[in-house]
Length: 437
Image (cartoon, rainbow, N blue to C red; front, top):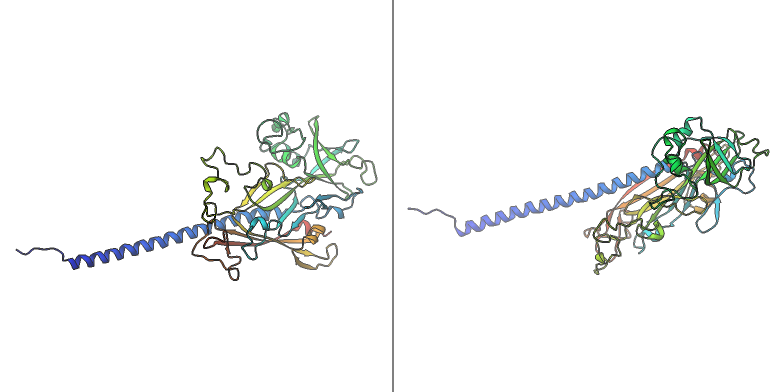
């Protein structure tokens, strides 16, 4: 009787064929997995870029809305032109834009390992919370109090409907509003009857905002909000400084019929989210949420081999925050992250050097002195935003000669670099252009 079976050679051939098939399947699966995660990281960077660009586009396009491209060029009776603080301690015109070239480059690229990357800073003065101009009923005899008209839809939209104002300066809860505004619980509870203060109104009129008052005769006044003058006869009374020049040739009567617009000063900056000096205390405080401290300085992540760690430091973020127009400090609890893992934030401008005339001469510039001195000349703002992948890929080396802009050297002591996705937009500034100051 003949016995059946496999010879040793047949078994060896079968094993080789099987191992080859398994290796091929594993290699294919590994390649597909790597490609999937690579595309996922790319899509994440692209999505982050688009969200950030949408936020920038909205704020930039509203620059000068209900305000002025340059308050010092408006007809007024004030002896001192309106101004905003500049970085460094001086002051500039009360204009739609301020710009600082390479202000945050050392924060973005502390090792100076990347060629051509920049981190500019942009400030915008706009009506951030309201889409209406309010009407002035009258001004107090001293000119330091403005009473708003209550019988119109703009007033009702601002001071009645919507969410309540949220935490105030009093109490132990985190506060969102600053200053001696006295938007207290009594006012907050009256939002259903047009007598109270809603979230939009409270934030629009908080201390540090700018009030732009324009009279029917075309006179412009810029004042700072510093308080609320009681709840008298269910009227909203705003205290301002300095007082208005009532009863003069520039402002006859009691400012009846003038329009009033609260303006906010918004800043875009690249910051280290774990640096309290840049973002304020407790901005990235996750205590109580996780078992370990998530800051890069935590001993848990203090890995000695060339500084490699799960954060792939530095993670620099683009933030948007509201500034106090009097001091230049950012408002508490107003900082929000627009984009993480920023690798480039470049701002440039298209300006009309013959602004105020019937001709138009457009030219590009990135000179901060020109923008800060003549914000009324801006016609378009050009944004270049780069977002990198969180981790370096060892298979992607970095070359300063050929890879600038497409790759980012996160840690020059490690092999590889991060991939970069770029977005480029130009945003026309119609509110500034139509004034043609």
